[in-house]
Length: 313
Image (cartoon, rainbow, N blue to C red; front, side):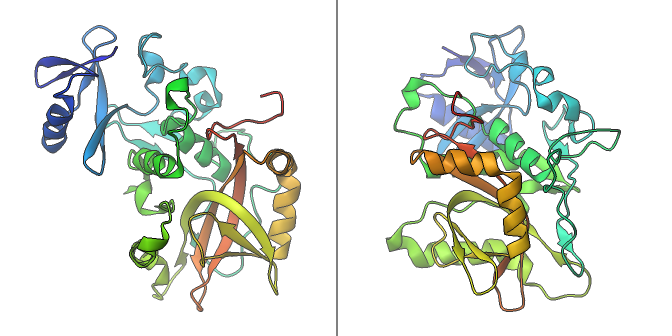
């Protein structure tokens, strides 16, 4: 069982008073220390409604003791190792990760050629290492700790839980000096009885896209579960779960290239009713207020939201 040092005292993770202690530390902006090794490793506190969770700092899983629940194989052993110091720059003081992206969050004129269309689109070469759109989805999933699973979570990992962890992970990331959370939209779990309130919060979150000032149009990033692609009069409509009545327009050429580039992911998703197809996309609003996809990538996850790449996995 993990122990944390908070305010000079030690607390087990099952201590009945821990929530109260952590809430006070959250207000003080104090970082708890996980005592699995030496003098302790700094953690951060995330709030979910009235509950508080102690989470590991970005990419610090390899520093924890292998017996600790916060342990994960060092990033040097994964594809993240090649991106550290270039696409991903960690500030050891704040624990924030500054990201360099290889896709645009603004638009001038027609859509640029997609960087996701070729077979090597997700690879990294040369000195200009940056995160692809799909690479960002993988990094978000990793830092949200959604790649970890124990049997204790069976039946407890629902979309509201996934959404919260993704949002919290984004709050630890910076893009061009601003929190990624300001640019990222992850739909909240939809409930019919709260439809008006949910739609109001969505409109507030997407309000920056509606500005019609001079210069490039701003884009945002959406991460959500694909419910379906439906034929439209022109192109396709991407329907995201938990966003009823809010389709994303995809032109036919982009949809064709998406199906070609991610043929494996679509095949796995279509073959298993329990799996989920996750989409990450940049989008803006056209003059009519419709959401239009500019660039898109997908990732398939199993019924417990764990990514996989093959039937064998």
